[in-house]
Length: 104
Image (cartoon, rainbow, N blue to C red; front, side, top):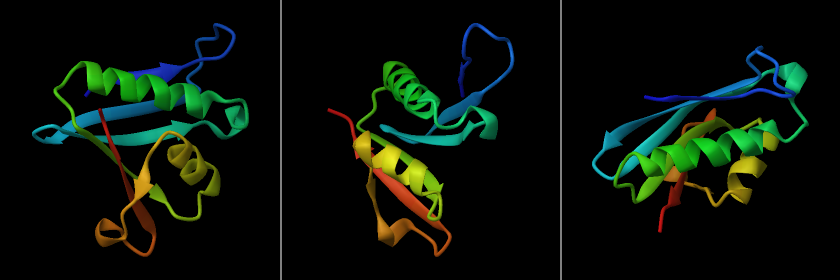
């Protein structure tokens, strides 16, 4: 499960983090996608997700990426939708939205 982190202005402090791991053949689940509260609103989430998805796809024969997001995290849900993820209610809970994206 490689770690992807994004820092701003060359600082060593960790601003965001994301992990990926294969859960099934050809499927990768993205997890622990976090942007530090003080670093939010600067586009780091988009950079992190773009790099994280690219890294996961590069290291495996992937046809689908998945993730879970808290339903009340509107900014994250919007970002993931902008990146091509769609919600899947059949695999979700009242608190968490399961999202998936096909990889072409």
